Amino acid sequence: MYAWPASEVPALPGQGRDLRIHDTATEGLVTLDPGPVARIYVCGITPYDATHMGHAATYNAFDLVQRVWLDTKRQVHYVQNVTDVDDPLLERAQRDDIDWVALAEKETALFREDMTALRMLPPRHYIGAVEAIPGIVPLVERLRDAGAAYELDGDIYFSVESDPNFGKVSNLDAAAMRVLSAERGGDPERPGKKNPLDPMLWMAARAGEPSWDGGSLGQGRPGWHIECVAIALDHLGMTFDVQGGGSDLAFPHHEMGASHAQVLTGEFPMAKAYVHAGMVGLHGEKMSKSKGNLVFVSRLRRDGVDPAAIRLTLLAHHYRADWEWTDQVLQDAVDRLGRWRAAVSRPDGPDAEALVEEIRVALANDLDAPAALAAVDRWVTRQDTEGGTDIGAPGVVSRAVDALLGVAL
Ligand code: 5CA
Ligand code: ZN
Image 1 (spheres, rainbow, N blue to C red):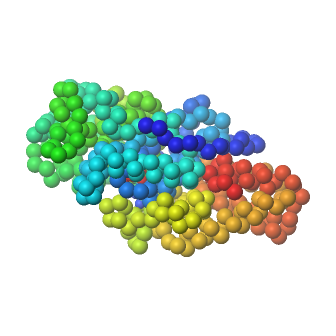
Image 2: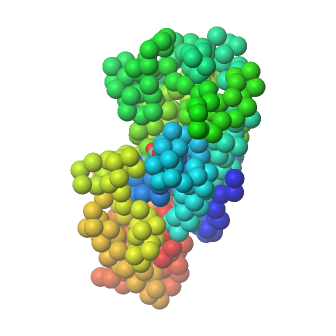
Image 3: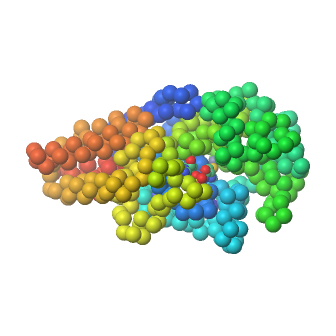
């Protein structure tokens, strides 16, 4: 699939800093040392509804990862998927009596527009589940041939017990896993499974649903976790730097993915850091397509909200925090954007070199965007109260905010 256009990333004076980031698997901060080409896989949308603020917040976090790496003069090899066939998508298409392909295409197109408006840098490879099927089938066959998969009424399941490291990504106990499995696409109650947590690798064709030729697996469609493993291994290989998503993906999605990869390659972990963003809520509950308590990026844009203000709202919250979307948090960002724009349009200001360093230090420290915003706020206040004679400074601030935070002033 094609992704979306990249906005320009201005080069900055001075030296970028290496990223220290929280890894769910080791439950602590790790300093990444990616080499000249950093590799990141970020789980993409299931395109059955428009991009909401929760999605935007999660993609914002990984956009910052990319920007920190680019600032260290590294290249970034960024891969993202689109889960363009899955139960929730098919259910929504059925409910609304529309073609599932048309629904996926429409929502993916809207996602591209939203990402472009928010200045999220695009992935180098943007891959749909459907187009990945030819690569998924041989992996499922290999898992089955290795004794790590079994058949149940034509469906093929992965056996979590085949992985000695199962559980080491999410660090949850069996009871918690079981609850989350039921909530997040698993089927722990289905009779006949070896372990209730075992996830599906290949679902045999169902009447009225799309299916593909799976060779020795029979006609069917892929399971969710193997989709991301196939795409990641194909485009990044094993032991890439970051696998990212919202915290609701730690279990089962990233846990199961690491397990599939462990059996396929004999190695753990698939990603050096498992990075998870907090959940954005609305009216006290996690924003989710299934609950319908949503604030859409496209809706705000249509209402005339500047995408830079949406982005500043996201940046005002630490990526790992759970937080609530309110009119007030958006208004605060609109006000801040106005102050910043007025400041960088003035002819001079205090020296900005130290500010660039402060933004770099904040982001390198587990993507502390709120600290970066506070540093810019302080520069703006100083310009206001003390003035300054550096005629280059407003331009430096504007370029730093663009390059490191993705906000065009
Ligand atoms: N297609 C799969 C990943 S392979 C999927 O989870 N799609 S999704 O559309 O449901 O979510 C896309 C991304 O947004 C995921 O990383 C998910 O964790 C994140 N996300 C969903 N809801 C929220 C929320 N309320 N707050 C923060 N992030 C969220
Ligand atoms: Zn995924």
